[in-house]
Image (tube, rainbow, N blue to C red; front, side, top):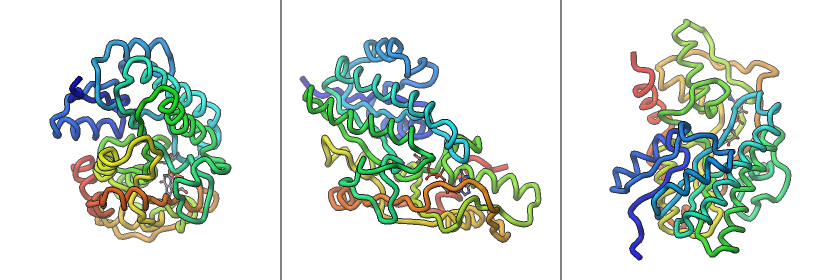
Length: 307
Ligand SMILES: C[C@H]1O[C@H](OP(=O)(O)OP(=O)(O)OC[C@H]2O[C@@H](n3cnc4c(=O)[nH]c(N)nc43)[C@H](O)[C@@H]2O)[C@@H](O)[C@@H](O)C1=O
């Protein structure tokens, strides 16, 4: 049977999905989208109904996640585990029952790895305790990643679990507790600049290290990984660490706003160092990011904050 030129995107109206759907369509793919209006994906009857109704697809992009950023994360780890694990298990079961020909491409997070002062290769996946701010969220992502491998092994399916950088770009949620930290920080800077602030607060330790990618680069990376890798849990970032201070400076530069950075004591602090070792992916695909941080933030400001 010829492979359908059609993909299913679960989470089509989320941050990643909003950017992924037009990208797939631009490549000539037909896209079937499941978004928030389709119902509660933590409910099996809903997921069963949606997958039963979908036509056969070549790939399922599962990009749904329930997440918070900032201090609230510490308080709701049970909730984040319960909701996310149910969603992921439902998608796995619906995949094998209704779309077994499809490759399940899901997205993961560096939060799934143990805390480490070194970049984390895939061999460290699930090998130790996660940071306290992401215990439940990270465990649910492990259910998805290791669960995909278990389903693929038992039922002869194909999957790829892509572990991503921290993303920024258009359509990110702007609420301070729901955006990724780059979008949250930029949004705060926009409002504080408009209010005439004379300094800008960077929460936590400014030397905190992350890897950040523009969502368009990250989508390119996922699609490049799909062309080369099968049945793998794969780090899909760029081996480019950046400090939170440097992100804040790039945000101020993108706003043409020159004020000193200050670090309020006691503000939210996540893991001190979070870096993936994406060497396997980079060597295997030759992929490299195209969008520099300041340029990416400038284009985001133009897209979402132009007067
Ligand atoms: C993709 C990934 O995204 C998230 O993980 P993360 O990116 O590592 O982000 P974080 O919440 O650990 O924040 C990074 C650092 O940034 C500092 N920081 C400065 N200024 C602001 C600020 O304005 N807002 C926030 N939220 N943080 C700030 C803050 O002190 C912290 O140390 C999770 O949702 C995680 O579960 C996940 O999957």
